[in-house]
Amino acid sequence: MSSHDVMPDMDLYQPVQVEDAISLAARLGDRAWLLGGGQDTYGWLKDRAKTTEALIDLNGIESLRGVRETEDGIEIGALTTLTEIATNPLINENYSLLSQAAGRVASLQIRNIGTLGGNVSQDVRCWYYRRGLDCYRAGGNLCYADTPEGMNREHALFGASRCVAVNPSDTAPALVALEASMVINGDEGERILAAEDYFVGPAIDIESTTALREGEILTAVRIPSTWANATFYFEKVADRNVWDFALVSMAVAMKVSGNTIEDSRFVCGAVECKPRRLLEIEAAVNGRSHDGASAESIAATASAGARSLAHNQYKMPLMNNLVKRAIESV
Amino acid sequence: MNPKITRRRFIKGVIYSAAAAVPGAGYYVATAASSRPAGAVERLISINVNGRTRRVDVLPQETLTHTLRYRLNLTGTKLACNRGECGACTVMINDVANYSCSVLTQQVKGKQITTVEGLRAADGTLHPVQQAFIEELSPQCGFCTPGQVVSAAALLIANPNPTREEARQGLSGNLCRCGAYDHYLNGVMRAAELIA
Ligand SMILES: Cc1cc2nc3c(=O)[nH]c(=O)nc-3n(C[C@H](O)[C@H](O)[C@H](O)COP(=O)(O)OP(=O)(O)OC[C@H]3O[C@@H](n4cnc5c(N)ncnc54)[C@H](O)[C@@H]3O)c2cc1C
Ligand code: SF4
Ligand code: FES
Ligand code: FES
Image (cartoon, each protein chain N blue to C red):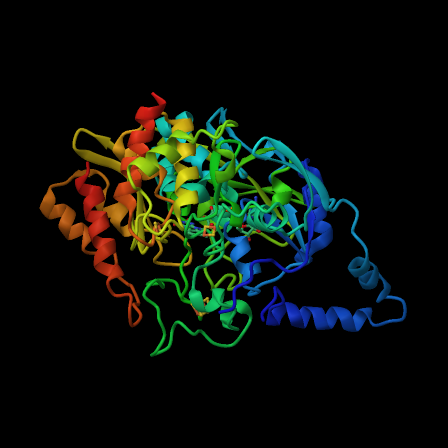
């Protein structure tokens, strides 16, 4: 693939008020691209696999940064960096599931500038698509990954609909486990979506990983105190500890008393185009205490219903084993 | 190749431009393409690099690596992958390590940029990290070295007395194709002693 040092000509807007960003986004519509840390964006533009007429840089908007305590939990501005999320005392004390997940994204330098909003809104990492091929997700008529010759080791076990790419975000499963809600602003005002509904698969929208509509900006993420200080388990399996995306990740929040898991949320990353909540596992786990044997037998069902491709069967035992480790960690 | 215009958007566009093909309706597109839209950034800006204010003509979409190397001649900062996957281009922005290939120069107005050229003292004394890397023979081929030096210097600002594991984390965003990682780590640990 040809690589270019310089991105093609485009306009750059640097609003400092969120209202200005919203009206710019509304006015420019699909001719503009919102810019957080740019760590997902620049690759597209450098490779000429996608182009835009204008960037709307959100980094100058101070009100979109930082972590605040609310009546019922915390609110994190969408432009807060992943490093800040990984190290913020408020998050570390009560919602360390999210700090752990944020701390495993990409590399230190990328976390120093990459934002939470960008992390949860990033595009898929299917290399056919990122290379600029005209596949289903790019508006074309076929999927290059889901063919007898296709390279699909990183791709989905569940929820495929023409496209078999997975959502690559490390923070997404943690936010779903914590029952976060996403605050979205647009020309027509504010709406709030549960994290579970923010991430969408290809059956709902094959061109976007989120429910954001054109011109809308994610302004904040709210985490309710529901799971504050719960027992957490996070694990990301990747080829290398730095830079690489999750092959499978597991974000689990559990309320434990004595040896009993009273309540839990098990959310698996990188097996579907949205974080996959493991409802059957939760139902089997809740209200009981577990030994190695029961953990093993429950976990063996985690990947039930998977539709694997030629090269990603390994993700099934990986899912099961991560569930087992999460249960055993109690 | 495939711009943001997907097949569906293309179809929408065709529908739209068919409607817009009435006389006079093409005018708006022509203006948008030929002049700077209101509110877009200025090209001539000031940035602070290694303690000096530099006035530069910077494209809206220009990366900091490009400005440093090709406009300011600061070629100590290396451009290798140009996509956030190696660390050769690492500089400090307000004392924090960043990949300069993946930051727009227009975003660092009002911030302090430190490149590998800016680390030694005014009298030429090397930065403790540079001195320690020499003493420990840290580099092998040397190509990744400027990035390793800057990452190590940024680590020691945030944490002057790191454990070896913390140093490993601090340098983990810098790839070394020669695999000289342990030698760099020895260098960081020695630098911490030199600073203490
Ligand atoms: C080498 C490399 C390795 C990576 N590894 C990982 C990894 O291991 N795990 C992982 O999760 N990610 C990884 N990433 C992906 C990504 O760069 C980071 O996740 C980063 O957090 C993205 O945030 P950003 O702010 O830089 O995104 P940007 O590029 O600024 O934005 C990403 C997308 O979200 C949109 N967007 C940004 N902010 C908003 C907002 N407030 N409202 C609405 N839309 C918005 C943008 O328009 C864009 O489409 C990696 C990237 C690289 C280059
Ligand atoms: S998996 Fe999705 S993104 Fe990848 S080639 Fe198939 S349709 Fe395109
Ligand atoms: S050149 Fe910037 S990270 Fe490789
Ligand atoms: S010393 Fe050769 S790449 Fe690191």
